[in-house]
Amino acid sequence: MAIKNGVGITSLLNGSMVKKALSAANETVAKGVYDATTLSGVDADLVVGNIKGGVTIFGKLGTLSITPAEDTSGSTVSAIQTSATGGWKKSQAVGAGADIDPIATKTLTFDANSLAFAAGFIYGNATEANTFKARLYMDGVLEAESGFLPLTGVSTWVIGFKALSGAGKICKITVHNYGGASDIRMYGGGATGLPIAGGIAVGSVKA
Amino acid sequence: MRVTVPVTGEMIGREWDGSPSGNPDDPIRPIDIVRLLVDSGYPIECADFSLTLAGINADTGLAELEIAHQKKLIPTAWNAEGEAVASRDETDADFEKRKGDSEEALLDVLGRPVDEIYQKTGEPRLKKPKEKK
Image 1: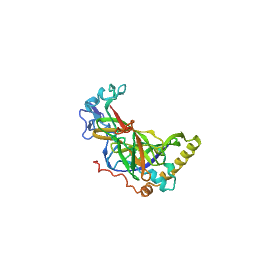
Image 2: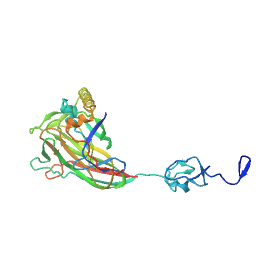
Image 3: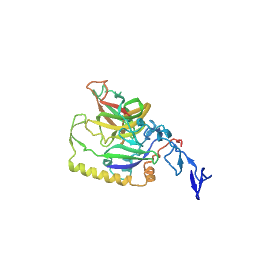
Image 4: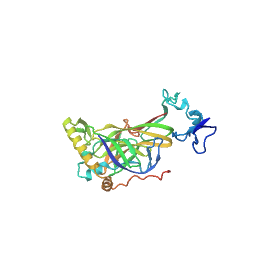
């Protein structure tokens, strides 16, 4: 029973208090009166399986453990082949501002929350200084570019990381010519008609 | 060194982490830094560096790049066909001088207003899809 002005009353006055309710839609707890309840009764997502392991929220000790696992992977060697005139190399003319696209490419399907890694390489050299650079594209984004290829044959690598998900995701290594029309030399395995030493490897992990 | 550069190309969507996906026929890429340096009067040697995409903000059209310089290989012998068959590393002194000049050039050209950079390279701003709100 409530007391008002020394007189006992058995009911609340109209308009003095309005019963409120918690909502799972937001964290606001407005001033007011609430029916007894549990927070997990208000928001069914408040369970130990949704809370990170070792973390306690409102008395619930979390058990959620996220262990990365291998998703998909794949690799491709270049489709460019050594030529008869060059023996164990491929000498290719590239126009000013043009590309060899691709040196190698790999298309894969990734899990919904996958983090992919790609590494592309080419063994070769420019015939003029400050012309060619190797590029790595992942899903239509330039992730990495090398310095200018030297005049002496070396392995040039480009590597990158990107979140990828779904089908048809393309990872590729290309070569871009920043100079005037010029030749690039790419080397292979000691005979004609073999792939040049170029390729791409892609791996990924998922949560 | 890290630099912030405008990007060009076409964005066609976003990945699960919010990063953009690009059109393979018009990929998302930094503006042509090599051309920007050369057209700004710097020698092309200043453009001899590798870059790695450290992050990209599709909303602002800006990317963060990790720039790295490597020692050059200087040819020292050639075969009958004029191909370099032996080389030596660039000296430490030459490398540090070249690296310093390149970094100074990059800070100059990339420190200009974004509008001026796009105008100088002639490349369009990043094309983006209409996203649902």
